[in-house]
Amino acid sequence: MKKITIITFALSAIMVFAENSAKAAENATDTVIDCSMGSALDQYSCLGEKLDKLEPEMNEEVKKATSRINSEWGAEANKEIIERMNDTQKAWIKYRDGQCTQDYYTKASIHPPSQSLVSIECKLDKTIARIQEIKSIVISK
Image (tube, rainbow, N blue to C red; front, top):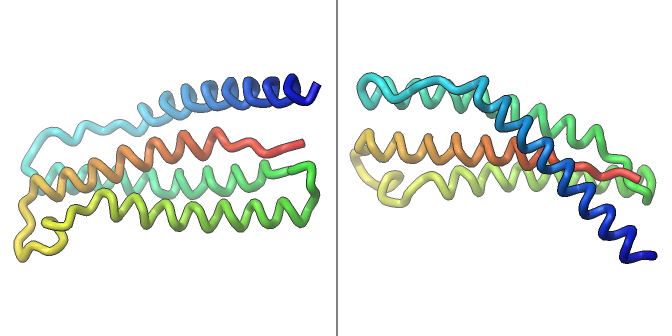
């Protein structure tokens, strides 16, 4: 009986994740702006604007996810889960920024525009994926 409950829960979580991922991908296309035209500086500026729009969206999704927390273990557990989610989000941002900033880019005295574009495109890709991941978080009774 316990295995059936666990399997049912896992399948439900997968279905919710798939549905939310599809919706997130649909929403992500709403914010698609073609940044491939113009100089490297124009492209960098355009990508920066996209990232500036996605980061508040990501923060809002964290707030929504924490508001959905309703574990079977009660209010104290909910509080701890929310604190851990917020800590994890802060750590994830540091991880994303570290992963997307290459050593030779940050340590070089000059920064070739192509490397700046690679870094910000990486941040955009990881942020879109993180928004989808956050939307799939469901912790309830």
